[in-house]
Image (cartoon, rainbow, N blue to C red; front, side, top):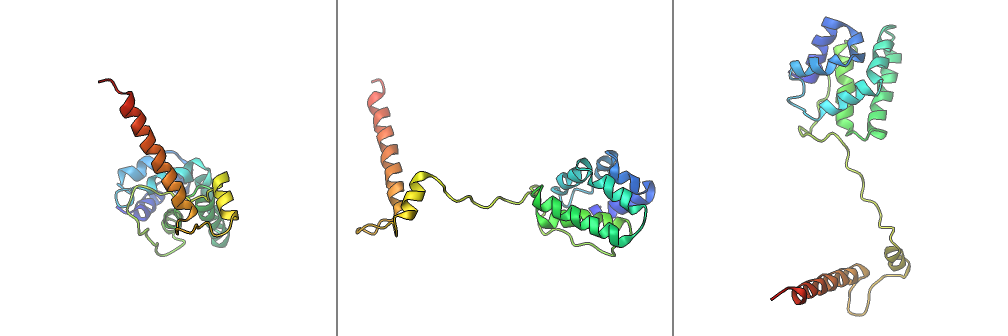
Length: 173
């Protein structure tokens, strides 16, 4: 069963207070709600452990859909920016709750059926002193056409070769 359908059945049976209860994860597992999107398990755990489920449950009591949706958007953004979940997983988790409560008519499922719900960090810029020196020294190319990065590669290859030679000479006969 899909996560949003399982959430709907659970909320109909137990009410919105179940959003704040640890047994929600067991109930979702009983409905096999994570079979299609295994990564959703981590996102739902965060909603429960981060207090988001409790707050969503409490805000649902007034049934002011605009206020609830506003907070739900805050949860979605927090899951992405602070917890580093992929946007489509965060959206699907929050939309599943909104759908289960009858606030929205349908959900958008994630395109990724994998196990990793986290956004990959952007590659960090190399801040080593050598990298800063080569970037500040102009184009970094020599007359032979080698750039600063290929010079580093050549140095690394030479060091590896020297290490192999030392091992070879030091081995017992």
